[in-house]
Length: 220
Image: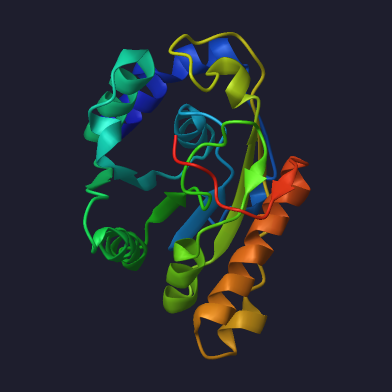
């Protein structure tokens, strides 16, 4: 209940006024069953607009910092994640990545929607960076469909490095589910997971028209 209250009553109207959001390709989203939504990451508010525009409930494996960040964005994130049962993960220590993947797998095994940004952090310069392999590792292990999602304009509403929100136009593009058959028919190893991840990132680049950088983004 708190998820939908926060989405439609507490934050949704503000997001619609600020971002005038539009969506295309919504018909590509399965109405039920496990689903991975993998997107580019331009701003903190990306998660807000994904949850606002996608009808199904999305669960993120959120870093602990989202529950302690200050400013308007931080307070809203903390309220949203707490109200909607998002999964906080301590990223310190050697098992951080394993814990995150285990939590994501549990979301999918329960028939839920897992939202993830394969770059691992926000792009500070608007370019699309090399994807980390966790997304596709989970996808290949569980067989859950992967739908690429691209946000545009969120960096106008919530510029990186600024705590102030501005007016802009947010557009969400939902791509077709990725065809993972070539990867599912092979033994899952690092080479296969890397190839599947590169396929995902090139699909995101195609829809976003961002410049692609074949190196990992610096944490922001």
